[in-house]
Image 1 (cartoon, rainbow, N blue to C red):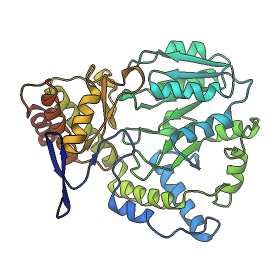
Image 2 (cartoon, rainbow, N blue to C red; image 1 turned 90 degrees about the vertical axis):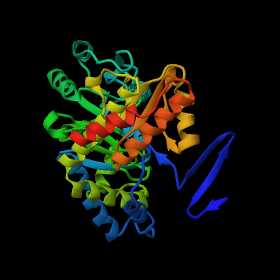
Image 3 (cartoon, rainbow, N blue to C red; image 1 turned 90 degrees about the horizontal axis):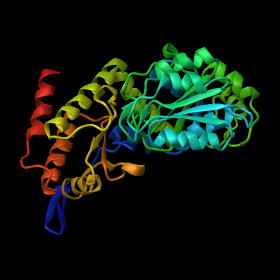
Image 4 (tube, rainbow, N blue to C red; image 1 turned 180 degrees about the horizontal axis):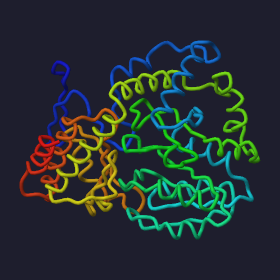
Length: 391
């Protein structure tokens, strides 16, 4: 029964009292109340001056976020839709594509490009392991595009896209980077020589889901203008035509874009360097806690993401995730694919702060005890507190 703003949940012998769940997923993430209020504004005309102004503001802020002068296109849909927009406008049936895959979303990129051309060459490494640059370069002879995931959400691993960009330049290919879950890690689109970047509203930007953003360099635009189109909704030519008048070809998710605009204001007010530093500090505190609890990360630590951590919990990841949700209201994710019950994935991106990290570690420790995987609790939280004190 209601107890003020709190409520009591009885689940068998478990009792939880909370005001709401703490979302610590790899996305979507917690959304700041100011951003939610922005999304609750009245719907407005997407063919009128209010939207034109919003478009111009968003474009400038999104360029700052990615450290780029590349043009940005607003695609109504998830990050997967953004990747399809990029692929469909750069690749025709006769083009050769190299797809780098060392996780679930790398494999999704492979499927995306395979729907467009039969000349897709995969360069694979085991999940959570570094990709081989020599293999990529050897495979990329005569390739038009190299595609790679920057932040592999399935494994909590960062891929070194800066080195892959040099390979792409050497072989004369465009580099397309899926950066859907990577915002919060260091990423410099122009400086690193990246041709196309795809991201989305619901992860590091910390806005509601519904829009992806696709950045095209000048070289990518030139390629897109020449590529045979296989879609009306995702046609680059239409997007480019309407962009000249600060519009999108079809009706955009205007309220989501209004929320993104506010979310970007919050990030830019914080400052991009501080934004990245905060993500590192929170991620490192979480990693220290995980190690103190006797667990280890799925990838090598030097490749660990500052936005998503993947933790090895063989055979019990689903049980731990369920325990954290039911007893403590902390929502995390189990693994994907063949690792669906062996990896626990925790997002620490967007507006996450130390109290969220500490609450998540506490829920993790107690859930490990409930599952018979730990004899005592407190080490993880203490390790994180020690790191925060020094950082």
